[in-house]
Figure 1 (cartoon, protein in one colour):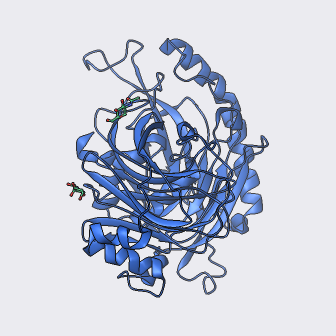
Figure 2 (cartoon, helix red, strand yellow; figure 1 turned 30 degrees about the vertical axis):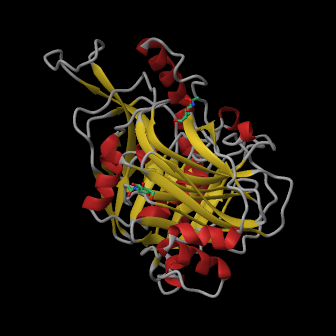
Length: 456
Ligand SMILES: *[C@@H]1O[C@H](CO)[C@@H](O)[C@H](O)[C@H]1NC(C)=O
Ligand SMILES: *[C@@H]1O[C@H](CO)[C@@H](O)[C@H](O)[C@H]1NC(C)=O
């Protein structure tokens, strides 16, 4: 491709196929992602000159080369694909540079573009694709390509894979367009993602993305707990194999056998909202008779107070959950969220239903519509929206909102940054609905995170 690697960081995503046991693996392939411990600029926004950023990048080059070689050796050693290394496709993220001339008015003064690039090597070791990052996240060392890269590569074992990176996952270009246009079922996603609770922890959103688009996602984050970076995984629409570790500095290889065609099994459970739980009937009832349902269920109880609080730098409208069971609704702009809940035991923990419908403007500009049930930091209302990693309370719930966008990412994060899947997800008339019962551990976040791309 004419790009010269200059090295920035390294993340590996490998996909391979076991020919020897094709019978056993029919309909599946083996995916591997490596969360690598890497040396990074600790303060990406603090570098003021392109020159110093490039120096840092070059310093990383040496480490990068060593680590990639070591990692590939290790990976190949541990994978049963070792003997079949020709069947391995490798995706690596690195910095690349491309010479430009000054007749090109976008050409930087040093005569070179620098891109944050994913490169793809085929099973024969050939460079077959490259993707240059579109949505830079305060990366002064890098340029945005003049035209959006829509990158896919083809494999003999699982068809087409789409490629995008990091912050791209939140945007229409190129990510959503790529998935729709190529009708993708597989995507590889190297990232350097700083976890942000309660809504944008790496594994939380990676899973939500795989579920929302019904695709397999191979996501390799950088391992730097000191910078809040950890959280990689291999996700199908109904299973997640993840690594999240804030405790030590060790990288991790994740290997999983996954179906070529992702299936969203949870959705078969319930196409309508008729099942035998009283909670469902209550909610169904409410769909048709908004005002009466709540009254019938909660009697003469006073409506809980509404308050505002900052979560993820956005001004959310909250309502606490106060009873052992009940139903509440909160609105913001044109989005109304309702929650029907039943607490399995009432702990000394505060939970609140939050809604936000507006333009997010801190660390990037993008329009969000969100309905979320979160565990608050303390028993104080002002703590709702804070980062929480542990919870004991298990709650059966149905959460829904009348979103204006079709792109709703279902978040379900449990105590200790573990993941769970909803029992039901889907549209019912103009409401997107998530339902979960019988959880085995405490709830941190249950959310419907909508992205209204047209309003960015
Ligand atoms: C949040 O929004 C509410 C209602 O629109 C407003 O009254 C409040 O001042 C806002 N809070 C902040 C911190 O902007
Ligand atoms: C959502 O529901 C509320 C309350 O019924 C309504 O005012 C609002 O217009 C609805 N939003 C959309 C996008 O339909």
